[in-house]
Length: 123
Image (tube, rainbow, N blue to C red; front, side, top):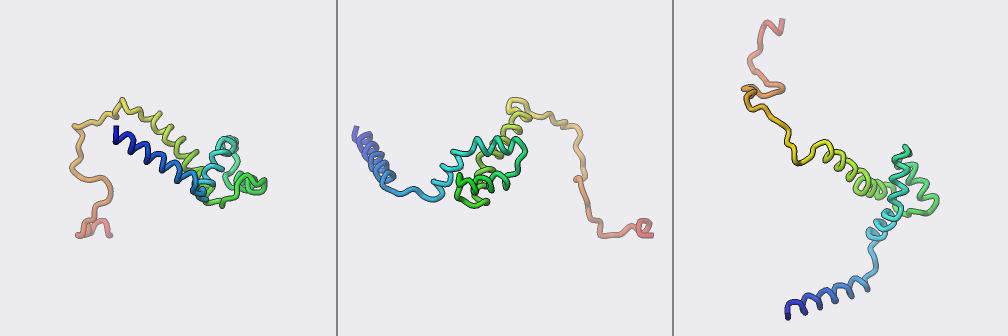
């Protein structure tokens, strides 16, 4: 019971501390982007460039952060999850690709350097 009381008092302490602490610029920017995320995704899907979307959002005062920050959020919150979804659909975890163990090559693939030149190839 004492541990539960101690844990609860720490949670109360943490809640009080975060309530009185001003929000960070990064936190505010992320909240702003999450608010416009669906609009950005729709515009990207419609074929608009990220630069065009960001420029319009800045001009209409929907965002106040720079293009690099905007692209960071686009990549992390929109594009990366879409890529991961596509990859997981193409390679389901329950089926492993088959490998043929009988066809092993003794020479590695790619370029191999031979320090002794072949005279026939040079002439």
